[in-house]
Image (cartoon, rainbow, N blue to C red; front, side):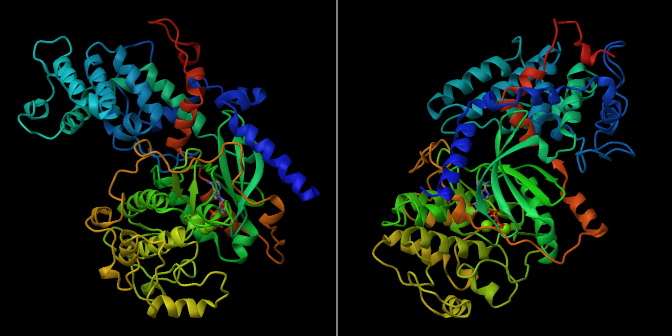
Length: 574
Ligand code: ADP
Ligand code: MG
Ligand code: MG
């Protein structure tokens, strides 16, 4: 084995053993101290910004100062400092959407005499949403008996008759949607103000304080490089304090400047922080070092689809149809989410679709995506990868999400055929010729395509965007219904087992020596304007993924200590 090979083996072992450890085992004990909650008196400014009342303890039922301004803080309301920029202090955001916020609000409800039944109903509604199909009707009946029966100990009389009506006859299975909406409205009206004067809210403020601390490279240990992008490398990393593994995409500042990449970096960061889907990588934080902008994202251990199409079994490239269809369905759900958020992706291709440990896929690489403003229906601009771009992009016309369904067609074709539809295998061909073929040539299909797969590809690769399958009336129902084998069957994680599960001991990335190095950037100096852009990029921790991480790694439980009932823990005692 040569030295390069040895280096890869060593790097792989370190990476495999770090990610294999159960949650906390990789945690650096010395770093653990960094995660101490601040004393509540250190967080008063933040508490006021989040709309909190007076310190709890002394006078109970304190008039929640600023509680009436729930809509988002007073004059100094929304987030001046820390990582809290743009944060809103709405009930939904504080008590429902943020995972730690929700747990603490629910704890408050449990202990509040007049609110416990509503809290229990909320918990049961969530359990109901997760329960198996076979148990649904029993669970629904039990829930009705417990909370909807007048005179019962836990009767939720604040719910309307319509929300609690028992469906009759052949009614579709209950989803309790209206009950849930009314419940949350009720909690906002009666529980939110007292909550903001409670110790639980104080605890929430402590966690928000911790969340808002500046993130730097020291927070992570780096492992091997997983891939190379246009502006820098992506490597595996692990947060010292929690042991959670992530991918760190580094963008070199000077290279960004030289190639006018700042705008793309900012767009990518903003979009990743905005979307929360199981089919798109999520962003845990954005920070900077002296030389790089860094995006810390969901680690996708299984490698990218391009690697799987061509490199896993080089003698037999491409996927059997059911596997290609499974990925296509998950990609479709990712696209649907983006399009519902008015984002055009523009760079779908196998290389940008990544596998996780279980074999599910997510979209990554939002660097070319664009966000359409409210009311804007079209955009323009030559963007994408040669061989994937839709005819309307190549013709420099205005276009919309339909371009992403063309790239989906190219991707599906490539998964099945192990070559793009506009290129012969192994052919070196100029972009101009590829463009000509996309605009004018029909696509040919080998016998690797079933009639249904061929029909799907033809529908997606329609040169006329108005005839193309895709996103209509806010979803992809037409495409899901019209397509091969199982595009219309649910491919949600957990419902359909993945057709291929990555080997946990294997590293699905090129050997280090083959990743390729960057040449150094010369003749570029960073100035104050660059520093301002970099500061905008480095917005720090993204709340939801960070809170999920703390809960999932057990760190939330370790920090969220409460004394005996009726007492306050020292860190909350003013
Ligand atoms: P670029 O925008 O420069 O193309 P990408 O975001 O596509 O960069 O990342 C480059 C490569 O790094 C990908 O093709 C993939 O192999 C690897 N990679 C990117 N993101 C992740 C991730 N979240 N987990 C694992 N590997 C990743
Ligand atoms: Mg890429
Ligand atoms: Mg990119």
